[in-house]
Amino acid sequence: MEFRHLGRSGLMVSEISYGNWITHGSQVEEEAAKLCVQAALDEGITTFDTADVYAGTKAEEVLGRALKGVRRESLEIFTKVYWPTGPGRNDRGLSRKHITESINGSLRRLQTDYVDLYQAHRFDYETPLEETLKTFDDLVRQGKVLYIGVSEWTADQIAQALKIADEMGFDRIVSNQPQYSMLWRIIEPEIVPLSEKEGVGQIVWSPIGQGVLTGKYVPGQQPPEGSRATDKSGSAMIARFMRDDVLARVQELKPIAADLGLTMAQLAIAWVLQNQNVSSAIVGATRPEQVRDNVKAAGVKLEAGVLERIDEVLGDVVERDPAKTVSPQTRP
Image (cartoon, rainbow, N blue to C red; front, side):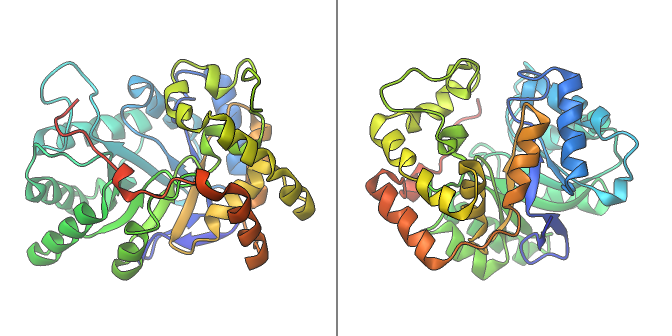
């Protein structure tokens, strides 16, 4: 396993991190989830990402139990706050009340005294940004949170938060967690340049395009049974990639992966890690062997010619519009 700094901070994270969105507490039985976490640990992954909303808070509980007994100082545990975790009007968003109550719930479920990174899961238009940032800063000072990050914020929102933090003396954002893959490059025009300037690192999710970049989805054919595309909790997100023109281009990546001695998933993960603003790529798994396969992408260097071949193959099916980074205008 290789390690990188999280943005310009002193925190080191594993290039491959383990995430449990749509798996722990929902798709995967707990014993299988524990085996996946153990495989991640065995392969040198030290960074684990979750969120309070995943599986209705159950994902944090499963991860907490799976990591029980592991030396806490050897881990980087990340979680998030924003989406609803209860029926009340204040059980959502980035208000002082919800953030404070949510971190306490997350720490209890994760069975830890602190999280290494606490992330605003979306931008909250209904809460003053100063209120959110002051609350995060308070959590840092209380020792419940070590670093602050965001997820799926626009470049303007990140810049605004950094400006307020600098003016008020608050802890600065050190990371952003966006979707990023060969097919989904919307962070490149605006977010990456800003982040490089300001010392913000990307912790990217869905580096294999919801599984599309494995090449298992063939144009004109029904998706394999048990795949993300047939799962009711994951099919909505993958739908944007399930067009025949996209799937046909992905099939053309297979010779490139074969020439490099990589699986398609390894090629996809290695591709996002070529971007030096990426601190870590999150992988999920339903089986331990998927973890073992994915970690082989760590440390892989892709030559410029390979990157050019990938761009030529994918052509205009790549999404690059930064306007695709959105948060709800009102709390869900």
